[in-house]
Length: 259
Image (tube, rainbow, N blue to C red; front, side):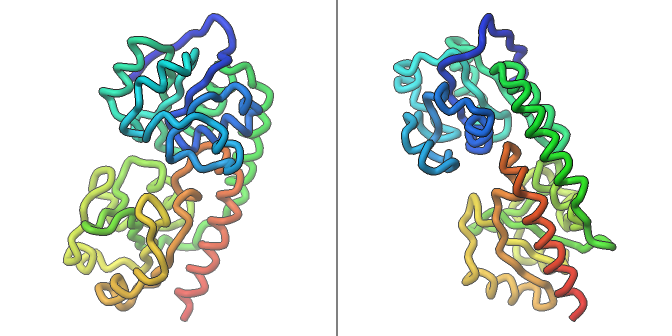
């Protein structure tokens, strides 16, 4: 998937295949140059409604993309699919991100700023994000945590991804850090791990308060909370809002553990 990209001039017709990077493009002032997005690109709400939808993150509509005549397509190694990206690379300039940590996200912002001639805007945004995370105060001691992204079957967050990195920054020790990526977790495995904290993500599976009970039955002693998945997994300009949100979660968890 690695692909070096040099453009002869700043792109004027951009397609974004990644929701969090779509939001970033708008915050870099590139809304007018963004012509195509995926059906999962949600923010900024009113602006993305005006853009052409080119399919999902893992099923592109190549006919629609061809009609848009992009001079830059922006994707991500994890969120998009290899075959689709390789097909696009045969016809268009494609730039790919590969994000596992906050530093990766900041580097991505810088590179996107460079390639789209919005270097100054990207620099200011990076400064704000970095400052926000420098002020984040993690838990005083690590708390064993299971973070779930899917139900039927249960899927949790393992190692080597941006969510695991965010958990670490909060002082939440990933109970499934020994497992790769996003493992299927059987109820017995969860009971055996016996985490102090269970976080249920609002995406990609839309966990709600009603799902807390089924996890509470498996782990009666755990503190269980539904959280905004975007704040843990979106690595574009949503990172501007993440530190304040994560701090409220940290403080709520710390308070619950005192009881």
